[in-house]
Length: 206
Image 1 (cartoon, helix red, strand yellow):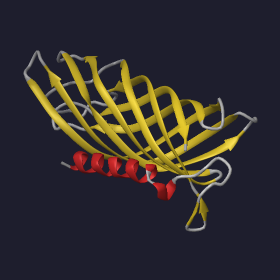
Image 2: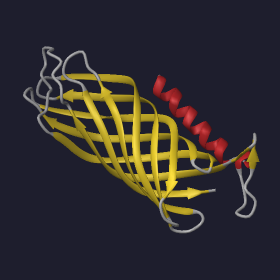
Image 3: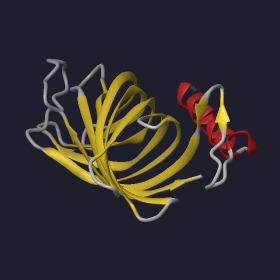
């Protein structure tokens, strides 16, 4: 229920950023509340890693010695309200990840939403480095077919990340990002699950 609410808020944010209130021309940036605002959207694809590094000592041992790599999707809507500072809302989709554990193969899938601040610094004319911090909410499901066990975890976590973008022109940037989503899953039986995301995408500046 909470994730649906956050998803709706993300959709409203998208509509708001696309509205005339935030629109601008290349020659005359819009000014709102004393800030120069520049909305943008970003779509990325990449790989995610999930690890289960600490045994909780519960009845089911889902601890994995290694990590699982799998594909993911990442969509961001943002508002650059200062030259070096922006606010962002990001949605991550995890289609599925398998971890080989002592109990059997554990399958994780779900989604994640985060909201936070992003700072940037230009290192060359077309290259900008990024750092971000925020709050996130996860909806991560786990199932162990060998035992019939399944559970859902919803967590509020602190997130952080690093990235870079290369400007192709005034409107389009090539982006690369690393996001640490913290402990995305905690289960009554089994172990904590931590998630990291690496992605490559495009950003469009309005």
